[in-house]
Length: 191
Image (tube, rainbow, N blue to C red; front, side, top):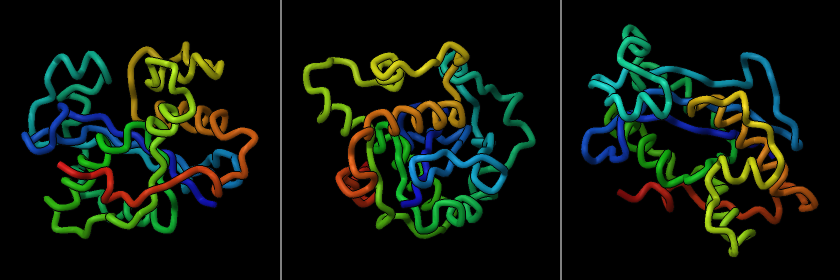
């Protein structure tokens, strides 16, 4: 099974209020192995066409200067669609990222990815660890002993790499792909 581990960084928390993506990062995984090399990684800083609030820059480190002159999502959208074609997406808190991705596709007159299968590792963690209050990516890294000391700020590509390690640890001992439930992207992208 071909998986794409994906994360985004944004200008805020609501695409309905005009917030946009400022970074998208995705890596390919096949047969429980992360694939390296240019054709297996999709990463872009994106010009959101609006200011990035300082409080968000403190979280992900992406500021207005970093995105100036970078492409908008519309400029890389087809390459993104080609990259994820035929894959299952693995996203931590899928509803957040997919609302932004679906909004960007809509704004650029592109088809939604409603039928793309998605595994939400946040939902999976809540099911696997019902007694744990915290199931953030940081908490899961700590729970599974995944080193994250090199991560000072959130970043879409770095968080995708950490999530790949978390997903492998979470699904250890399971038949890969058959007992990890996925749902169509449309289930997560409700406004």
